[in-house]
Length: 323
Picture 1 (cartoon, rainbow, N blue to C red):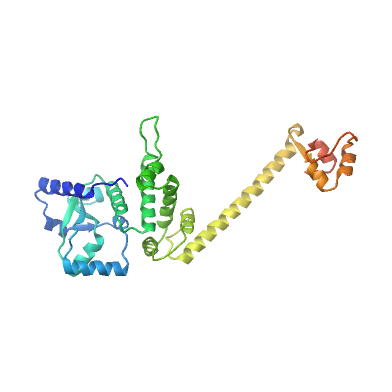
Picture 2 (cartoon, helix red, strand yellow):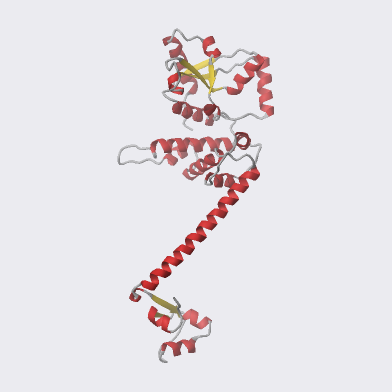
């Protein structure tokens, strides 16, 4: 995968920020860290065993990996803030380490980065997550799907020159070494995952709750009034969606038949005809009857590929069609 040189980018941003703003100190930032729920959602959860292992390691060896912090202002994250120019330091990577350090009073280091807006932060977080080696299959699919959605929504497909339109799915397929169809399925999967309540969502992504991918993709297309909280609720939603789809299809078919029937009754009969094939006549033993009805001479041979075209008035007169 074409990766971002995260370490280099973080180091440059941190050095520049601390150099250009003498009022910022590492301790001041650590005391004023903000945790935004909409960013924390991008952080995969840890199982109880993984969390305990991380906690034991930090207690024994300290927090060796710096937390990543977005250096911005209150105006960017909260336009209605009373002091919009006030600095804001938003945690965007290291939430589990931060919780553990706070709980156990362990010191930690930070790396500062700057972004124009929260959208760029989210883009960076997605790239950062898919670059990790310990991602589950579900997490990787989810983040690929999120990236596709964000690129598609923002750009409507990546564009090169005016005459060269590059498909977003193809670009990401090349990046992740999968097919464009996989990327598009990932996007639907991500939409379904985002219709789940937080706990269920994390269980599915970490792999502790196994749900057929097809069900999650069907959930993406269903309308839900609130986040789905359990597998049973998901199955009920999908089942109702299937029933609604069947009912809508049946209604549309009935309406179509009515419209066609009404149109046929008013149509110019020259536009309508009925073709009876020889195979039908022979299979049903109707050769003699058909000759009589159609007054066919002995020179007419009825074979399987025989065709007899009858106008609608004739078919109605013979009682073959009733309108």
